[in-house]
Image (tube, rainbow, N blue to C red):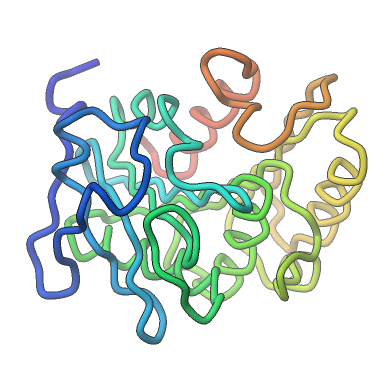
Length: 239
């Protein structure tokens, strides 16, 4: 990994302030990454624990699974940061983030805006499970402000978020990934994809019951899914 990609980008604007590394169990993070944690201003009065690693004009926003944290994306996030800026955060009430109003798609949008404010010119949203639902709803809200969206194992409806309805307003390219044996979720992903308005909506499916972030993890994930994700990001951003 290039040295620049491994360097965490710290926040330095009025919209983000340093977070305490003791706010959660940051077992996944290196010492430099812990030092680069910051508070992201989300919807309303939300204050979200967040981290940016990597550099470049393309930013990938990572939205984690239910009852999880940004650590669910580690160490996979570092491989993305070798090529792109990566912004990961904890949804309100999870990880190191205090409880908020539960506007999870709004929190995804806040992370995308932070990335844009810090030099990103193209944004790709990527979510797993609950995060997949959130990024689809966020993509419908943000429209052409993003380059694409990636949904891994996202349910059609979760925590008041209706990805199936939102999909009809998603016109940017969308990649969908799931395990064919991930009962319930596999069907949901197929239905959300079918409803998505975008013409460019590739799908990658593996014969597995693995779910969400486990599809891309370097230890138990799948090279086919990681390759599909990388090619999708490169394709929609021209990078």
